[in-house]
Image 1: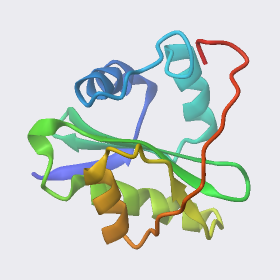
Image 2: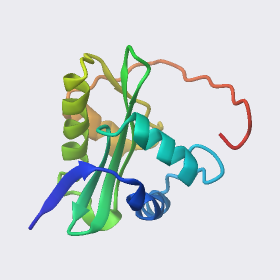
Image 3: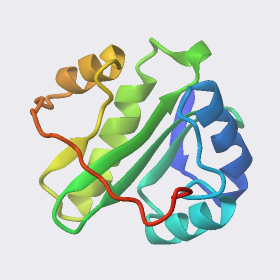
Length: 143
């Protein structure tokens, strides 16, 4: 059957959190990754939150967001048993396709400095690295 990509649904929530855990993404269950927060995000980003499925098993995710000017690739994750099969690239390209459909021409991703695999993937997909520093201010610790 092969891996298929489709928009995530709220019914995929538990599998998504398990995937984030196994991929080391440290889900914020009392904040941005709570079921309530994800439900809201799915309503706002229905076609941009994508999952890769092997049958009914969720094996990959990408969460596309935007700030109305720039499109962002977030939470790209592929289950360790499925890495090296091109799933991450397919997820990013599927997300980019939706971004283009919505009129975005700039795509970006924040990647940890020690995440060499993601750096390599994004370079292969035509992204260029930038020396931008990321600063943040949290209103609450759980967000």
